[in-house]
Length: 237
Image (cartoon, rainbow, N blue to C red; front, side, top):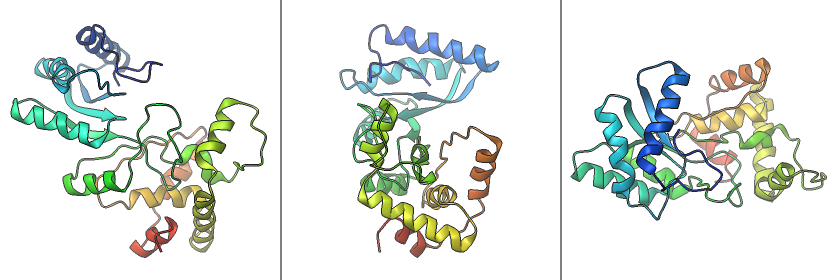
């Protein structure tokens, strides 16, 4: 990734230098001569798409990057960037990394973060551009440990309650548990499997802390869901 800062936007100051400086750090850390997908962590609406894409395409021309990704970009802005790239014989964004999970965020977890809504899903269906969603398991919401009544003793717990502890999300959790019990899976595994049944290319980012959690993520890939079950889980019927 490029542009990992606490500012909430892609840094504009000395941006071309930033691209190559952070790219070199990534290449050295990964011990490789090129990166398959170089992802911008944020957008900056004060910069034109030309300003953003041109240094990245310079790195592509040098063989350091194979493809580009956009994280926390709106879909109209991705379209703008890709249209500019097409018209100028450059590479645009080949993947998008925004949030999506069975539990819907009531608001961005942190300022500037973008979630894929239904219009965004339609965008991915039409263009078949892959989505690499972060917080794909809703930061552990489907473990059932989060409730509105629990004490918010730290900032993270406070945000979990504010962002995820909604009536609809608890209905989704209940349905994931119910379906999982019938099929021999946990609610966490059902929620991840639901994502894997999207009608477009999707590679959810997971964050297992233990071997057991990793095994659970792998198990989720073996769960088959019908279209009706996917709709039911998401309260669509």
